[in-house]
Length: 112
Image 1 (cartoon, rainbow, N blue to C red):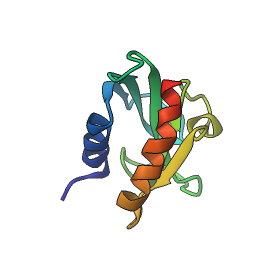
Image 2: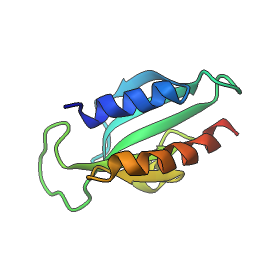
Image 3: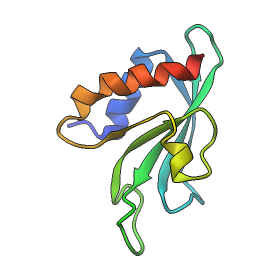
């Protein structure tokens, strides 16, 4: 079974996004990973960010990938949870696949 990261990579590739960098070190406690994206579709070169969001109710230390509840999308590098969620969010749940289309449609604003 594919992980959420693998599924997301597949969706991004089909939707014309390249992953330039995956940041995992020295992030704020609300972010598990931040992915730097670049559009390879028109208009080429537009950038965006996807953040793997940590459950705000989680307390204490955690390992990478632990207590992650979903994804946030933003035009700018996020410096707060609110910025990370500024375009759209999606939760990791049974309906992830069904909700991914809406997430991808909202991501189109990154190309504007």
